[in-house]
Amino acid sequence: MSQGEFVLGDGRRVAWPAVHRLDFAVTAAFLGRASGAAGLLGERGIPGRPALFLPGRTLVVVAYQEFGASPVGPYRQVSVSLPLHVPAGGPARPLRAPLLLPLLVQSLGSTERVYRDLHFYVAEIPASEPSAVPYSVEVWGEPGWAADIVAGEPGQAGSPAAGGRRRWEVAVRAPAPPPATGTAGKGSGPGLLLRLQASLLGGLALYERRGYRLISRRGDEVLTDVMRVEAPGHLAFGPWRARLELGDHPKAAALRTILGDRPTCIQTLVHRPSAARPGTVSFQGGTMYG
Image 1 (cartoon, rainbow, N blue to C red):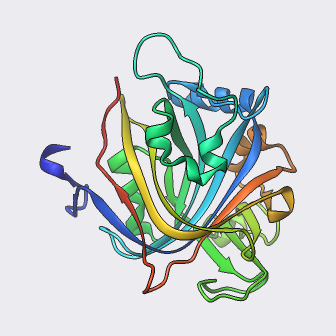
Image 2 (cartoon, rainbow, N blue to C red):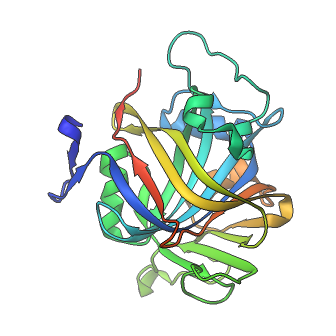
């Protein structure tokens, strides 16, 4: 990226660092199979190996984010990410601890500083606005696509920015196909990628200030970037905090190989910024890996 700027195919310009105003977010980490994650990384040409949480098990991080403002306008997205051990050069070094502690204990500080070999690969990143898709695909080479994203109380549409709701969910569906080929079904029909249900109440109050190293592939180029999150939040642990359901959309097949049919939640982190305590997500600008 030259002079801190990237020009999208439609002529829009994105300057670096790119700052997003974060209005609301829910992130949940689930146990996944390291072997399935390694297979997906190999198929997509991503260097590194899955970071282990337990023997043979890695984490799969599912995040919903509402951006009230960004370089490409307001939009919502759901990302599915895998934590990877990507050495900067030479033989692979073990992590400094057997667990992915920065994912679980916020007080350890930025994952970018604490674990320099720890990166996150975004395996899926559907967005609510088609205009936001080139931002993910062209800049970083992420597997972005336009989707129907409905968030709010179970069975209701709308944003969950208001407090007081005990349960919340987001569903991601592919746009309905033409009538000649049928329509996207409800529930676990062929149009559903995933449904995430979570509790918004309780947990440890904190103000997150962390940097996450990202890795992706754009054509023949492997890129890295740093995503910085600054926002108030509530951190909570336990399998009862969130539930993840995978649908029958073709894109869910690879995720099911990693997660299985009943993923176990490890932790949730809910961000609910306000005018008094705003939230931001920023990206520094991709650079070549290696």
